[in-house]
Length: 112
Length: 117
Image (cartoon, rainbow over all chains, first blue to last red; front, side):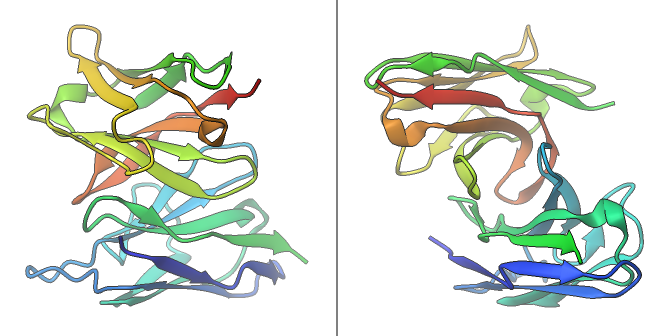
């Protein structure tokens, strides 16, 4: 199984400031067509996960452009350019290159 | 608008059975990969199973042989049949549209399964 490792575990942020979350996979998520099968989700308190970024860097419909996904192969980053209060919650990365789909342990973003 | 609504979660004793349902609207279930994902209390996410458009299925090792994923096209509904339930199956179960090679782009709100004596 592909192991997904996220850091940090917890991220206190100041509104208006940038934030960055790292995700590393135990094997490359880059396929032969050049796609990285890495997605990012946000789970707000009491809600189900919501897709933010797919294929490593593509924003899902309705996701603000302050969210940016980058990286390739085994190392990926989710950046929020200017954190807003509605961005609090737990962020997960997930690989969907192969089954079993596997998730990172999550990064809890909270306002300072 | 795409919507997924799970139901069927309940308290059950170890060794018991349960069937979860996921009613879909806004799209046709049989035209997409569909997955079940669970979330253990206070913890992260754990993929459970996928059913492909052609009807083939795959399972996580922890549930293989005990859980069965299926769909009813006439009802546009996804199911998860769970047998021989264990305390470690206690979780919120989400259905999601997508699977390997396609992202999980829509999720239901989840249904709670509690396995306890």
